[in-house]
Image 1 (cartoon, rainbow, N blue to C red):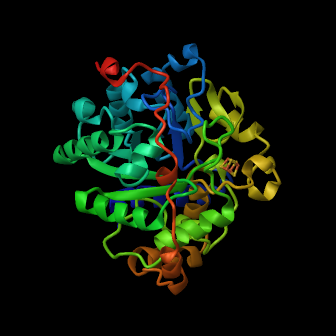
Image 2 (image 1 turned 90 degrees about the vertical axis):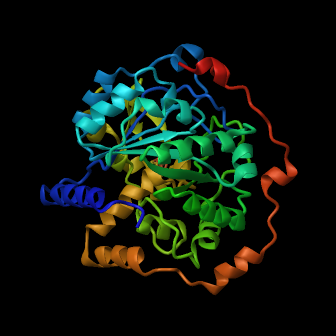
Length: 375
Ligand code: SF4
C-alpha cells in the first residue's frame, strides 16, 4: 500500500461524515497555490504564463490558513508555481501540519536538497516530487537538462532525513510505456513511499499543444502501463482512479472535490479551468454552474479531460458510496495485478518517444536562474 493507514482512516472517516450529513458536494483535497512563479518553464504547463507583476505575488501564511479552515478538506496539496520559491513556505507548511492536515508539497525538487532544512519530518507532510519519467524523458518534459539529477539528489536527502516522499508523474502523448514501467522500478528501488500518475491536461496556454492525450489514447496508454503490475509497485492514490485511467470504469467529474485557492481567490470551477474567481469557498460551491462542466456536459474544455483533480475525488466517493465500491477498492489494494494479455501486446508495439525525434528545448523561465533564487 502506498498510503499510510492513519491517513486512509482520516480520509475514510471524513468522507463518511460528509455522507451522513447529506452533503452533496464536499472537498477532499484543497489545491492551495501560494504563488504562480516557477524555476522551470515546462512545455506542457498552463500555469506560468502570467505577467511579471502577477508572478511576483505570494499568498501570506494567514491567507493560506484562512483558506484551509474555510474549506475544511483533510488534505492540502501545495502546487504552484514552485512552492519552494515562496519565502515563507516553511511557516505555511508548519501551520498546516499543526492543524493536522495531510500536506502534499508538490515540487520539481530543484531546490529540495538545500531547502529541506526548512521543514520537520511528520506523518502529515509529504514531498510530492514532479518526475515525468526516466532521466532523458523527464528532462525533455520539463525543458531542463540536469533537472532529473537535481530532483533525485533532493529526494535522496529528504529520504535520508526521514521525510515522506512520493513522485507525481504527468504523462503526455509519446510516453513510452516500457520506459514508464522501468521508471516505477527505479522509484521503488530508491525507497519512495508511492507514486502518483495523471494524464496531462490540454491547457490552452501551454507552449506545446501537440502532445496532449485524448481519452481513448489515455486509456490505451494507462492500460499498457498499469496492467500486469509488478507486486512491489506502490501508488499513493485511489486504486479506482487508476482503474478509471485504464478504462476499467467510468466516472463523472467532481471538480468541487479538489477546489483551488490562489492569489486571485477561489477558482471556478477547478484546478485546470479559470472561469472566474470568488472570495469565499461557500460562494464557489453555491454559485458555480457545475452542470456546465465534466465530460458529459458537452463543454469542449472538458472533452478530453481525465485528470486527477477532476476524477480522483469521484473515485474516492465511489469507494464510500456502496459496498461494491468498498469491495472493489479493498480488492484492488490487496490482490489485483491486472493480468491482461492484450496489454502485454501493447508493450511490444514500437514507440518513438518524443525526445527521440524532437530536440530538447530549454525554455526561458519566468524567474531568475537557479543560482539567483537561492535564499
Ligand atoms: S472535466 Fe477536467 S477541465 Fe472539466 S471541470 Fe472536470 S477537472 Fe475541470
